[in-house]
Image: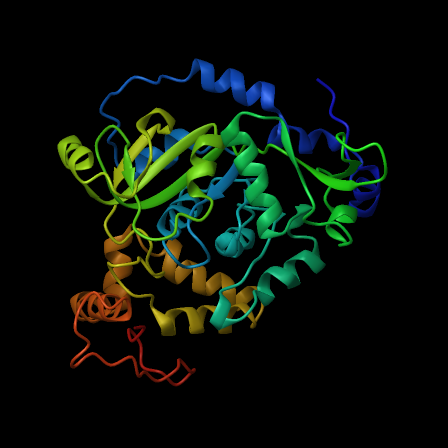
Length: 364
């Protein structure tokens, strides 16, 4: 099947061979993949290392769940880099954590919506690597437009019409978006057609899941419900594996059904150094150091990644570097107090921002 793209965007993006764009919107391939998928209710538990090795292939379109550094499967991003997966296309709204993968060629292509960490600032390292050509933006989105693309895939339709994006430069730089006239109106009524989009593989971190993959999320699910239905392969990492009876009895927040899931991984603290609502707070000084190192160029960033990602085997070694048990106890208190789930007597959010003179292993 030959796809027709927004020619103005193709010209602006200087893409000669548009076949690299096809798989994201290839609804027939995604539908065939889904029909062949094993939908049986079976035990899908495996180790994190095994799940990344089996389901993430070089060149895949990689979706990382959560938002920025909130409930994001950061440890899966890191395991992808440890295993040396190459030439991935990163997609997410936002895809903040793709910069780690740019450094060593793991993620040279991106479908971008936003790259940054809110209060810590925007990602200067990502911007610099775009200028250097180490990462290529294949399509540029707003959060809302990308969400519509996932939603269309979840609904099983080829695309949706929207007024979002009209008058913006997004329609000039996103080859997937087309300005079409509303087919229900005789006169002029421009709309943006947003195609259904299908990642190859997604990793979504949740609060709890059973062994079949039924997954519970506390708090905003962002795009993860739609993305879980849209993706061809889905890895669920969970703070804890609970019984199927628990999922059935406590079904509030159970938003991802087992039919979509290929692998279930028990991965406590899988969102660190980010924030897991109700469970643990984010490592504030770690992010400040990370963004400082991003501003110092390739050599500094490579050293940072070697220290934190390639120099650790798993999340437990990461926790030791963050401060061990003391770090986790304090950060659990901060998370509970921040969400008013616990009394905040004796809990202080005061801290000294990270500087080059900060002592090591102090990141809360």
